Length: 320
Ligand code: GAR
Image 1 (spheres, helix red, strand yellow):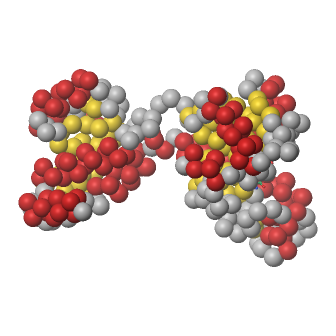
Image 2: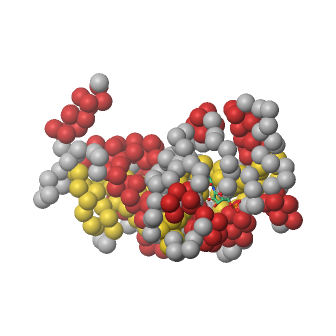
Image 3: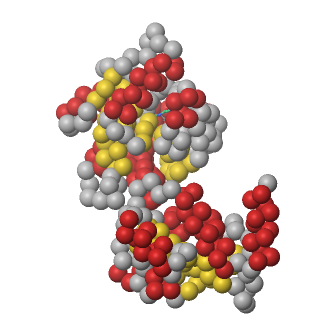
C-alpha cells in the first residue's frame, strides 16, 4: 500500500511532531510527513522540520477571521498532497467548515484522559482533582472541541510532588510513544485484516436473516435458516498465496466476472477454486476502498441466494 501523506500542524515546541517524523522513518511505517505547518513563524518545531528536510509553512492567525486563517492552512496541506491533517500541539480551534472538509482525516493529541478535562490546563485540573493518573488521548477531530472518537489513550501516574509542569513532562514522554503508534494503526487500518473483516461483517450482517458461518477455515456469511442457509459472501485473508484481503461475492455470470477482472484488475480478481463457480473477489487491502460499492455487491450477492420472501421484503423497503 502507498504511504498515507500527513501534514502536521504545530504551534510550539513540536516534540510530538518530531516523534511522529522519526517514527515515519522507521521500516514499515504506513505514513510519511509531507508538511509541517504552523500559525507561529517562530515555532521551534518548524526549524527542526526544515533541518530534517521537511517542507514547512507558517502563517500567523493575527488579525484574521478564524475561517479565513483555516483556509490558508488548509491550502498549504492540500498543496502538499496531504491525505490527513495531524494536530500536534496546534493551539487553535478549527472552524466547523474546515473540519467538515476532512471527515475522519484530522487527528489530534490531547494531554488528558478524555472525556476528562477538555480544553486547557489539563494537568493542573487532574492534580487539583486528586486523580491518580493523568495521560494523553489520540482522537479524531470533530467540530466540538476534544470530543471526536477516541483512537488510543495512555495513562501516566501522578506522583505526590507533581506540579503541572513535572506531570506535563512525563505525559509528553508517553505522548511520544502513543502518537506514532495510534496514527500508524489508524492510517494503516486499510491493510489490517481484522479491521477489514469487521467492516465486511457489519455490512453483511445488516442484511435480513444473515449469520456468520466458517467455511474452509475462513469467515463466511449465509442467508436463510441455520440449517438450510446459503453463502452469499466469503472473507479471504491472502488465501492460497494471493496477496489480496478480499470479500468474495457472486457475480451475475462468468462473462461479467471475467470482464470486470480484465478491465478493473485493481478492484477485482478471480479467486482460486471459488472463481470457477462464479465467485468474484473484491479487493479490500487497497487505498480508499469504496465501502458503499462493497455494500452494493453484498446486497446483490445476497439477492442471488436469499429466499423470495426476503427479497420481496427488500424490494418493498427499497420502494420507499
Ligand atoms: C502536547 O502535550 C499536546 O498534547 C498538547 O500540547 C503539547 C504540545 O507539545 N496539546 C494540546 O494541549 C491541544 N489542546 P509539543 O509542541 O512539544 O508537541
